[in-house]
Structures are given as structure tokens and as C-alpha cells.
Image 1 (cartoon, rainbow, N blue to C red):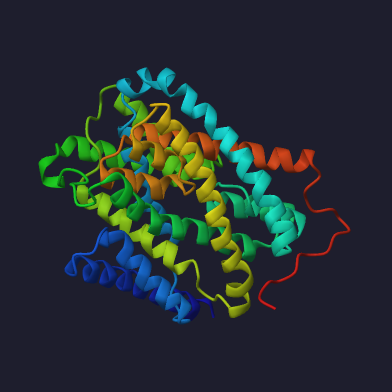
Image 2 (image 1 turned 45 degrees about the horizontal axis):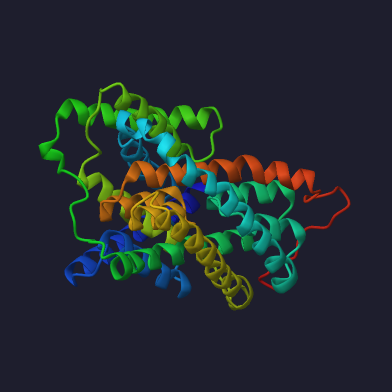
Length: 361
């Protein structure tokens, strides 16, 4: 009985990847920006909204994210470590930005949108989608609402950020993202591949959140600091990572209803405006104080996931070490701080509490 279901699920995943590849090819052929990211994203989003039965291959998507983990880790060089004291002031602004976002977001979701306290709390946290959904589910939040809120935040910021970079900071989205595989030493390619898989598996075994990125990142950073690797993963691997990030963002809206669009997605759009305003204020502060170049400051405080911002930072040639250090600080603070703060504030499920309402009704 299970075999036909598994076969149908596999077919949906294969069809979804094919759709993503078609989107990438179409955007590339039309000369549109970031075709391997935006092409899959747009076509999968349209398919999801049209109720086409698509499904993102999560395991393969995680495998592709290990490429970004290695790319980030390879950018952690002794020179970046030496600059950490210089980043201290801008890094100190990260927790302040998180607190400001929460102080605005929680009342918005609670009083304006009408979410329960737990859902409002985790919806307002600018952390990764998987982490916030996991913590929210454990606390008794509305998982579907959290998924759509954070998916909307990531989707819109990924779509808007390149436009802001090109129009305000004169960024170039056509610059090379890395060397082709044929030009890199085979031994180093093998080491990077081993670091990607080993880092991912070790991180998963110890229960690390974001294991597919953080595990390879930490292992690659050690290898980079030890002088074992000197390159980022090849351009082909980074393009593949873009493809699967785009597929995952678009496919995140599978099964969405009009009730969810009216209540949850609209709320997510308004929240993006709020967090974007907060992020802009902090980015402008960093730029004004001369703590970072404009595009680095913008990307460092853009409230999206580290994977998405790493892709864009690589494409525009930003200081990947600076950008990712700030995002890792934010993600670490949210992952560690959000559950602790929710317990201290009494935000969580009590035994007698009912399950949260389904926003699809």
C-alpha cells in the first residue's frame, strides 16, 4: 500500500525539479537577473498558487545547501578573523535590531492580525523558517500560519533585495560567482565535498538547527583557517544551490487557500514592510558610521535567511565574511533567545489550552 504513494511523491518531486530547471532556462534565455534563483522561484510559485501538485525535494535541497555552507566556511579566513574586533560595533547592533523587530511584530500579529500569543511571538522572530516553525509547534503555535508568514518574508526579501542593490548601490548581478569546476584542484574539490557531507551529517546527529548549512560551514571554516582549502565551491555547484533555494521558496505555498491569502499572506507582506524599515534604519546607521560599505551593510541587516543572503552576497561580490557573520549572529540570538524569552514571559502552551485555530477555515 505504501509503494504507490511513495512513487507518486517521487514523481511530484521529479516534476518539481524539472519545472525549476525550466524556469531557470527560461529566465536565462530571456536575460533576466539571477535566472537560477528567480526562474525556479517564479515558476514553482505560480504552480503552487495554481494548485498544481508539486513538492520540493527536501533531502536533495538540503544537500545543495551544504554547498553554501562550504562557500561560507571557505570565506572565513584568518583575515576575516582578524577583522572581528572591527565588526564589534555593527555586530552589537544585531541584538538591538532583533529586539526592536519583536517589540513591533508581536503587538502587530496579536492585536491587528488576531493571532494567539504563541503564534504572534514566533511569527515576529526574524529567524529561519524551519527553526521558528519547530519552536512554535513545540509551544503550541499555529504551524501553518508560521510557515506562511516566514515563507512570505523570505520570498519577498529575496525578490526585493537584488532590485535595491542594483538601483541604490549600483551592484552588478552579472559578475562571476566562482571559478568553474574544471579550473579547481581535484584534491580540493574532493576535500570540499567531504566537508559538505561530513559536516552536514555530524551536525544532524548532534541535533544542530540548520545542520545542512552550519555543519559544513564550521568544518570548512576550520579547513580554511588551517590553510587546507583556498577556494569556494565551483560556480556550477553554487548555481545548483540557487536552483533548489528558488524551488523551495516557490513550493512553500503549495495548498494555500484564499482565506490564508487574505489573512496570513497579507499580514506577512505588511510585516515585511515593518522588518524592512527596521533593517534599513540599522543598515543606514552602519553605513553612516563608516562601519561597512553600503551593499555589505544592507545585506548584513536584511532580515532573510543566511542561505538566501549568502547567495546574493556571492552574486554581487559583497564581503561574504562580514555579511554572514551578522546573519549567523542574528540566527544564533533568535534560536537561543526566542524559546528562553517565551518561557520567561509565559508564552507557550498550557495543558488546558486548546489547539490554535486553523486559518484555512
